[in-house]
Length: 285
Ligand SMILES: [Zn+2]
Ligand SMILES: [Zn+2]
Ligand SMILES: [Zn+2]
Image (tube, rainbow, N blue to C red; front, side):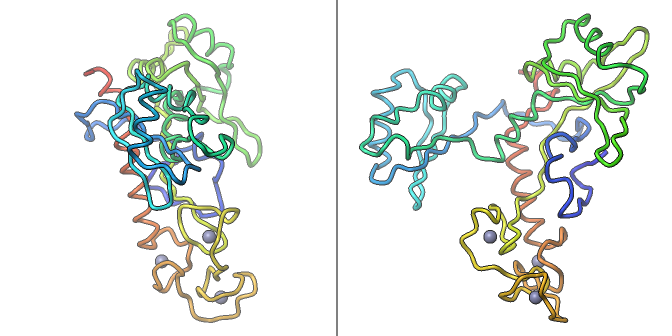
């Protein structure tokens, strides 16, 4: 089982982030705050001020409860909704046509880190489930215990397509997932424990310039060598000197112990800690 602290080789496991990385529910890290509503980003509006945005939203979404509107130097608006209803309203009914900009150029989205939280909050992994127990038997047990779920899927090892003892369950909502994590699942007279899925805090790194927060597809920077940080491709490097393109220390740019990598990882984890509600918090609210 992978955890946050485990070192993942840089080129492996890119897709398994959501499926593979999980974490036992932490008993020491209890948070008092209630579930935080994610901020939404609006892209593509240039000549609009914050107050204009505020007035426009007030006219078109009169019931929306908005905490604050921020605008970056690159013309990205960040809108902080006060409740889930407003959040959904903004995401689906943002008044794109109310601005002089072509509506097709306006995009509203959830930041990647937070989207990952949403994608994983309905998922749990049932542990130590013997291979002879079928997905269908697990589904029946879930029905019997009145769980609302969407999918049951035995985790297979990609390498040789061997089945594992972990079973992924996608629930209809977070509350059903959390109930299973707290209570476990009875299949006949057998009892199985579950762990919630958590998103990976592995930073997004560019394979072209080795910077963080973007991929090579969207890279606007010059190509740098992974090994020596000079302006050539890593595959053609003949330099004996090892130098990191991010911190100039003597390691390759994709080294997971690089201070820059650690810093990025902590930043992502901080966002997760703000947005992820542990099952124990649910009981309290
Ligand atoms: Zn780049
Ligand atoms: Zn080089
Ligand atoms: Zn470094």
